[in-house]
Structures are given as C-alpha cells and as structure tokens.
Length: 253
Image (cartoon, rainbow, N blue to C red):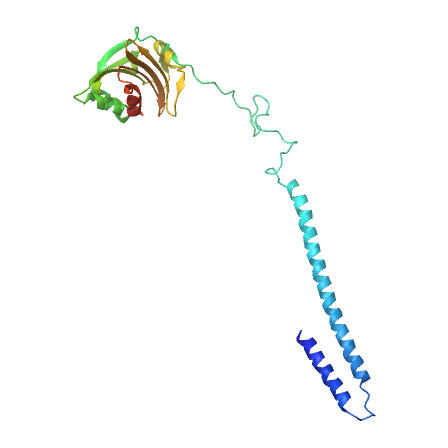
C-alpha cells in the first residue's frame, strides 16, 4: 500500500513538473513508461502470491479429506466393527479368548431346602445375636432392647448350623396392635425354608421391596421381601393400623 501511494505521488510530481516546465528538450515519456512497468510487476507479484496461497490452502483441504477417508481403516475398531474378527461370545465352546482352554462355568448353586417344623430350633438373646452377627442384625436386636416392644428370637439350625433367624414382635402403634414376624437368612443363600416360598413371587413392588397386601378379619395382613447386603428378609405384618406395614419396612430398610 505504501509503494502504491509512493508511486502515485511520484507520478503526480512528474506530471506537474512536465506541465509546468517549458523546456522542450526534456522527454519524460521513458520515465513514465518505466514507472508504469514497475507498477505492473508489483501487481503481478501480489497476484502470484495470492494464487500460491490459495493453492496451498486447497492442498491442505484435499489432504485432510484423504486422511479422514483413510484413518478409519487403521485401528478403527471404535468406529466400525471388524467383521473379520471373532466377536466376544462367538468363541467356540471350551476355548479361551487368549487361545487356552477353560472349564465350563458352573451355574448358580441351588439352595438346600428345609422345613421350619423339622429344623432344630433354640431361643436366642439380644446379647448372643449382637456378639455373633454384630451390625448385620442391629435393627432387629435394637427392638429387643425397647421396653415398648415384646421381641422373641428363634434360631433355626440344620446339622448344627444356624441358617435362619425368626424374630417375633408385638407392639402398639397409634393405639393399634401390631404383630410382625421377620425371617432373616443367616446362611448366605445356602439354605431356604420351604415355608418361605410364598415370598418369592409377591405381586407388588416399589423401589426397595416386593409386597402383598390383603385385608383379613378386620386387619391388614401384609407380606414383604427384600435383600440387603446379600441377606434376604421375609416380613409379615398384621394390624388394623393401615400404615403399620409400610412404616415397619421403612425402619428395616
């Protein structure tokens, strides 16, 4: 831009000099022609520079397009499946994905069933349960320490091993009698009482437990089932107070 202004300034000065000079022997046409040619060269140089820049940009765009088309074929497992490779789960039976052989996985172990009436039973106290099972039974043993609740604990044993705890509770809520029974699995799912089969398919469910609610002889009779920290709980509550069951389940959970 400065060169153009300089050229125009020189041309103006030369023209004014030529017009204001009466010396007939001075011929400035050659100077003007040289100035005009210099301007043409500079414009041509600028044009070539812009053409070269545009060509370089076009080349970069072309290279980027080619790379986008090529890259998915190199390690592009995140972009498209490799139909030539064996998919997980398609390996032949008995073959390890790494090439070795593995044993067939065993299914879940079925629980050993027993009858409550045929099992060995014995009464247990709060202190014994607290020492043997600690915090895992804390909410149940805490009820046995309340003066307003009558709590009885029974251990069911198979081959001398305690596999189930039965907790019988009797208390008053809003002036209404509440009778509750809680069966707590102590075997880690190894044993299951036949009498608890009715808890397997309770029809209703909320966010934390399944349940069944009926009305018998003027009282609500409810069953509930849930598992917490790997321990199954089967709960039954009878009371004329409508919310006795839900409030007791809320306490246990």
